[in-house]
Image (cartoon, rainbow, N blue to C red):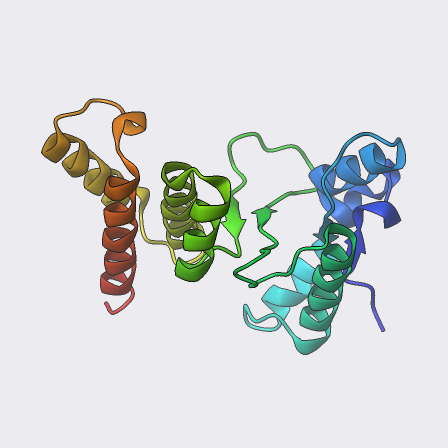
Length: 193
């Protein structure tokens, strides 16, 4: 069985061709004892296999991803998809060679409406929680579903105009909650076409 997924603790800087530059560097920093959050890298070979399989993640790769998530849950004490103690992850693309500004990122994977409500309550900062959620919806829609950023930026601009503010940071938790709902509606609308 091929190894498609490496925990940061399993890699090193010499594995750039397999782990990509970012993955190899995160593994090396982990090995050096630097404070790197728990994580794993899906190999460049898995990416090649994904395309060979018609842009589908095969069962073997998915099983290894789920195993890596389970390991992260064990180390962090958090659980992916759990509304009381959620494990939130970021997904960052990488390549063998450095490509600044060309790689995509999705932050806060694991957030959903139940989790964001708990996060707002536990953090005592609903504005922050709803901002994280609306950003997740925006990034996922853009990167995964190819709904252009401009649609979401227009919704943000409309909300700022409606509220008479100039900066995103001036929007309230309720504004951001409303934006999250608008973002979800935009995502659904664009994916029906």
